Length: 126
Length: 186
Image (cartoon, rainbow over all chains, first blue to last red; front, side, top):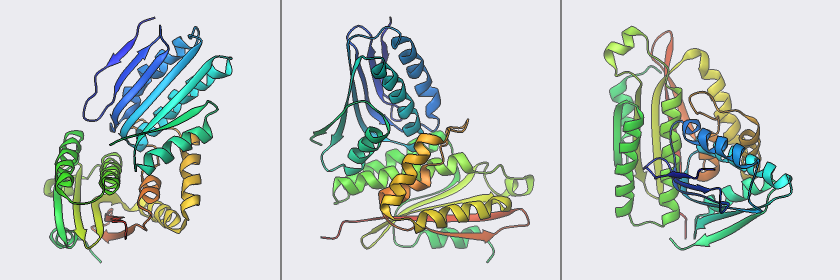
């Protein structure tokens, strides 16, 4: 299965989804006006990946900013991962937030309370 | 009260203005505004948490404008740009104010008022629950709006929003929304 590699822009994050290693990364800013356009291919990729995932999928979310339009799409990404986890595969989400960014920590905790997969909150320096 | 653009814009420009814009609200304009405000915030001596809040709230305010601006009928169109909106970011003491303005059809006014009043009446925990509920249960519109913008603004700022609707003509009101980010007091 092909990997997804997308360069970041001022309004969209960089993405690296590697099916061979099971390491999935979303990093940067996610503030497009219409986030469906950006996230639909990622959700479709996860759909395919979920049919034959590696034994442990590690998801690194390291966002500086995301808007409410993206927040729904990110939830869709997590819902796909939840299905992979439900099918008895290891899935862990590392949710990175910059120190003092309580809003970003809280956003991670909000997802953690909705989605049944283990989250690790990781503080990084500014 | 009836709407006069010059008066409204003057009122929105009170305080120490960081940025003021009136005209079409497009994705490119939003990108430009965010770049400008980011470099201005770099120069301001405040904690990064406040800068991030201002940036976040500005993103939601601008994208709310972008998603909800009503197509104007011919007569207003001649006078204003298509997708006309107003934005002012200013500082008064330890409050940053993000003020937006746009025309809304009168038929939508009550629903919008009720929504803001409801959000303004909620405690922080109630806002958090509402955010999670809408996040988990409401579908995105085809334009990408999710009905979460105002809730997110209220949750992040912890301040009540102020608004007014000024009569423009039989069909339209001019909607002015002010949201406030406070400097931490210590």
